Length: 327
Image (cartoon, rainbow, N blue to C red; front, side):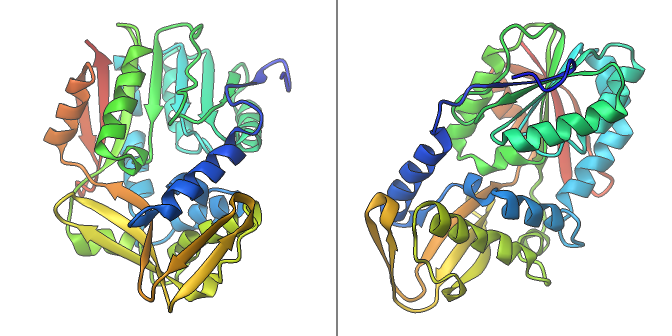
C-alpha cells in the first residue's frame, strides 16, 4: 500500500494474525506452571507511550548508553558496511536510527530505509517523519512479527545493514535467540552486515533499579499487559491486585519482570473461555531480559554463522554494540 512516492508499506502478517497470536499466547501461558506471557503484548498505544517514558528515566540507562555508542561510532559502521539499504527489525519510532541514517548518507551510500515492526501505524508515523527530514530517502516499511517472519525483503539491494537495537535480543530465550540469529544469517549475503545492540551483565542493583524505577512507570508498563488482556480478551483482571516485581536471576543472568497476585483470585478471559486461578503471592512472568558478556555474545553469533568485526561499549561499559558479517 503506497502512502507517497517515497513511503510504501507492505505486510507479511495475515488478517487477524495478532489477535490470534494473543489468544494463543494467553491460553498457553496462563495455563502453564509457572504462568507466563510474552513481552510483545505490553506494546499497545498506551504501553508504547509508557515505554518511551521509561527510556527517559534516570534509572533506565540502556537507551542512553546505546545512543552514546551510535553517536560515537556510526561513521565507523558506515565505513565498514557502506550499505545501500538499512533494515531495522523492531524499529518502533526509529529515533536512534537517525544516527545511522546520517552516517550512511554522509558516506554517500544510503538509498533506502526498511523499518520492520508489527504496528503499521507506528511505521507510517516514523516513516513520514523521516521523509520530512531526509529528502531523497525512500522508506519501504514492512509490517511483520520478527519472531515468526523476519520481514527482510528478498529483493532488497545490497549491500544492506540489518540493525537489531535496544537490547531486544535479551527478550528471547536461548533457543529462540539461536533460531532468530540463524534466520537473520540466512537472509544476508557476503557484503551485508548485522548490527546488534545488547545490554551487558553488571551490578544486580543497577539492573534491578532499571526495571523497578522509583516513579513507578515500569510498574504501570508491566501491569499494562493486564489492561490489554481485559480489553482484547474480555478479561476481568483486577489490575490493582497485582504488584510489579523485578528480580535478577543470577544463574541465567537475566532480569525477570513478574506480576504478583495480592490475594487468591479467579480471573475469567471470556474470549478464550479460560478461567485462571491465582494463589496469594503467585507470580506471572511477563518478561525476561537477558544480559550478555562480550565473549558469550560473540560465541552465539559465531554459532549462527557470523564473525564479529567490531565491538563497542559506552564509556561505563554498560551496553554493547556488535557489528558482524556473514561467514
